[in-house]
Image (cartoon, rainbow, N blue to C red):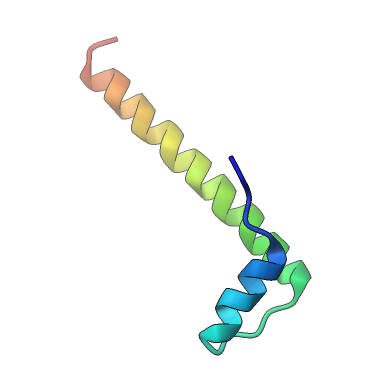
Length: 53
């Protein structure tokens, strides 16, 4: 999976009037990728449970 760069996050948020540092952008990206991973695992687990496996 291709990760978004912290620079891109800073740029996107800046266009919405939110100013963050590169370090904050890196932390935000780490958090969001971990959250997405957890959500995906839960979704796959529920699907497997629904199939009776």
